[in-house]
Image (cartoon, rainbow, N blue to C red; front, side, top):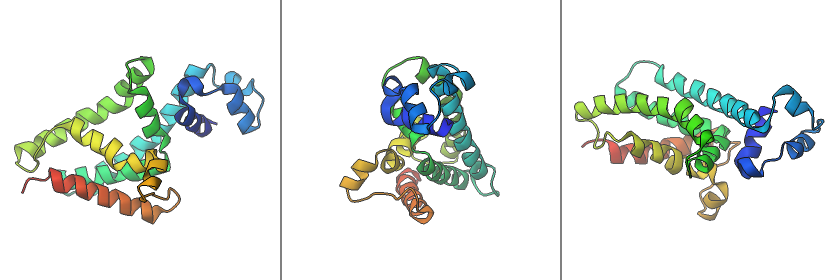
Length: 193
C-alpha cells in the first residue's frame, strides 16, 4: 500500500493524489487506508519514510563497504544512490515536486533525509578538498548532479526516451551501466588532475 501511495504521490503530486482513487486502484475499501494509516498527510509521510528508508539502507552498504579511500567511498555511494533510485524513481520525483517552494512537506524531506546526506557529504568533501583531491567541496553541486543529473533519466523517463537514452528500470545491468557512466562523468569533472 505504501509503495503504491509513494508512486501515486510522485505521479500526481500531493494535491492531485486522491486517497479514494488510490484505494480503488488497490482494490480495497476507501475506508481501509484512513483506518490503517490515518489522513492523507500521514499516508504521504509513511510512504516517504518507507521509500527513503530503503534508499538510506542501500547507500549505507556502499558507505560501509570494504575499505578504500574517501574518493572510492564517495564514488561507490553515488553509484549506489543512482542504482537505488532506479528501483524507486518516485523519490526523485517527490523531491522535485516538494523542493519547488518552501512548505512543511519540503521541510520534512530536507530535515529528515536530505540534510543528513548533506552533512555527511560536506564532511567527506572537506577531507577530499583538504587533501587536494577534488576541484570543488560544494556538497550542493554534487547533490544536484546526483539527483537531477545522474538521476534525471530515472525520474524523467519520457524526456530520456526523447533523447534516445532511456534506462530500462527492469534491467539491472542497464541501470548499473548508466550509474557507472554518469558517476564517471561527474568524477572526471570533479577529481583534481
